[in-house]
Length: 293
Ligand SMILES: [Mn+2]
Figure 1 (tube, rainbow, N blue to C red):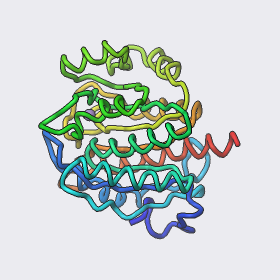
Figure 2 (cartoon, helix red, strand yellow):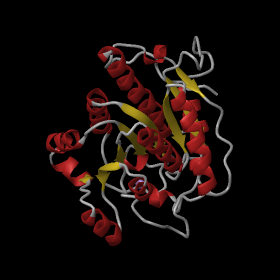
Figure 3 (cartoon, protein in one colour):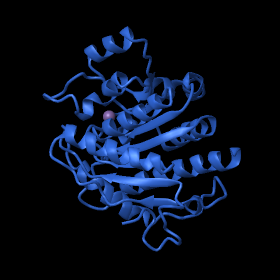
Figure 4 (tube, rainbow, N blue to C red):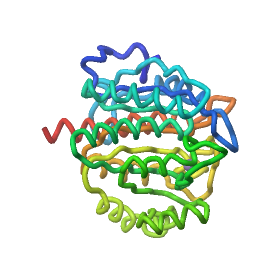
């Protein structure tokens, strides 16, 4: 199934600027499983999207969005990370933007590893910009170093700089680790208290290219209840897309993922939100790439 539907004109991987990789994996979600069903539901919801974007006054699909077949998921997150790493490297070799649809947050580990290897080969650094209610900085969780709760700790190990946005839940050990390594999250309550100041802090901390990982639980449960761990006090829609727009216009984006949707048993607005979010970010990235060059 193609993002935006199989009827979209001129779907062609050669001409596409972005390649979507569905990763239907959720072995490690703790509170409310089901993220494995998200890629299919998000792709299905995307068929209802308006192709024209009123904010950008353009039709972003024209820059080419190609959707790969869902990855064949193994049982354990380590093997999965190796599979994802390989496919993401292949996408980048084709000079396309990789866009992953999860799945739980563990699917990001392989993608971040791929980007890390590619940047190291070029002698370049990169930053992971994480939107999330949680820091995901545990070294190990439920016996695995490749759990959704360890994503950013692995990113740290792979040599990424880290910017965390929307955080409102973490363990004491994680806080100690952050302090020790000089990582200062932009807390959700800072965004609530003074959005413009928080946004400036995010933009000022960006140096160089970004991999963006969006755990949908960064959003407030009032608009995004269908996540594994819905933490109250999250970002609203306009805050999230406003930050994303500013970030995409400021720097190069190396890859994106959108993770942790656990679809409701009945069709719901949340899968449509996720589809809209992906189309929005792609619109911002295409705008930035095709106006700067
Ligand atoms: Mn989270």
